[in-house]
Image (tube, rainbow, N blue to C red; front, side, top):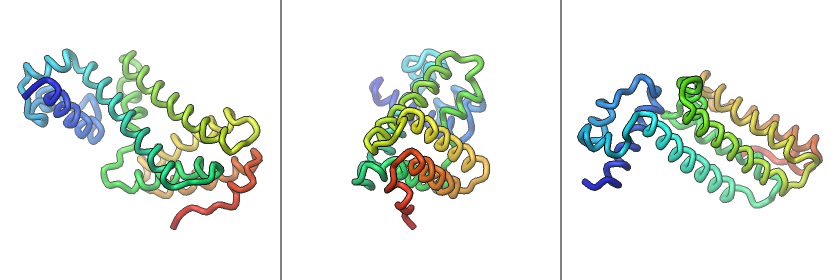
Length: 198
């Protein structure tokens, strides 16, 4: 097994174990076993656990944002609907039986105070989400798009956290209704007249 294959297998194992159970509860030996690689190969790919945690989060960020972007692009032609479709995607994600909340909030809660790298990756992820939402809102257009995008980002994180704690996917629909009201108040008249899919 070459280094690239080993790295991919280790990251696959890390993503499952870290997201399901948390980072601190998973040891390197368990990761090695789950990935089917030797301990030596594991440390060749990731010299320290914090290297693996940061790589896991960066790969998850890429996949998470790509999935969101693809969904929004495929489910909304009209610009004024796209910010709302974000919440429809969240509902789909929250309905997945493997949903455990935001990997970045979870990781920051575990390690943010002691790991500069985890804190940095979490902030970069949230910054990239805010930038994406800002682009969506600018296309509507509305007054003060940056402020509105910041409000939508808070709704996204609040919905994710609420769904993770309560196990209720409907947090996404309640957040969508709030987003509709914010868009309408900001001047996106059509936003208030769109309806969520059944």
